[in-house]
Image (cartoon, rainbow, N blue to C red):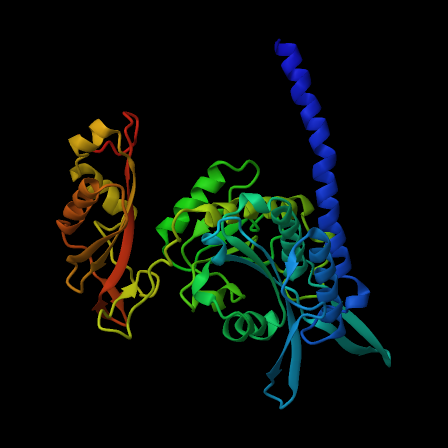
Length: 435
């Protein structure tokens, strides 16, 4: 029996290898075209960018994605500082969700088309042309997104919400394409539940580990990412509750939409002619598209919408900052929110007897303000389990000893933060909530 099972598993592996190789071949094909001489570096408003848009349109159309743009893209114009006008374009496609109500909500996955174009210089009296091919920035993200779009289109019956695939122009010119999409082209922005941005996902090794930036502390989104990562073999991206570099996700962030920037990070070839296809990890690009598929599916199929996380509120009556916005974040016993959980919440919280008897367990996400004097106020449960469990969390957090206040420009300020409190019926759970 053991021998038969081993043979069966070996056959599965052999069969899977050509499929994986075939998919990687598509990724290579996309990158090869986007970085070819004929596209001349895809600068915003150029013929190269137009050819790239045509290529993306044809690929999406062939994959069964519903196109919301014409073949030449949804074009837009932007006035430049020198008095000239830039003409660029977006290509937008959608796969409609199957849920009759939730299909009117959208997960947007984006990647920018454009790069820097060409550099012309004189060498020995002759003009030489250097092409900024932008293999990693951002042919890698476009290739991953094309691969993802094909997979989602094939599996449309597995997605409750609709998924929009946005290929933005003029990202290198102040993220003009994503601004145009949100402010002029797409009127239903309140129904965008999340934006995932694929930008520079093709490098690996050394400092180029895969990471995800959520822009701010968003425990609900972090929990979803953790669950996806735990069930996904091959990639384990690190998650950071900050931003990394300016790209199209930032336009969505400023609209209060939850974001995730997926990237393998900056490198010395960034914005140089050395950013070439031979330096990309094509297996990783293929894995990124599969990982993003799992993440998008989790967001698209969730019963409720993901929280947008904690934003600063300095223009309204509450007047608080986030821990990311200040010079020195508030601290609990010289530590972070994790220290607060370990040294205060878990030692003093009690698992309600009725919840234990009913087998109720889960994660409570609570937000609270740390005042200028370090006291805790305004404890609110944003995602709960049961009323009794939620009340226990509020009671313990509200009774917190004083924190060391946050500091901004040399003065104490109010900050809002959050924690996730786990209730698990397990003797081996590391914090051991009291019963």
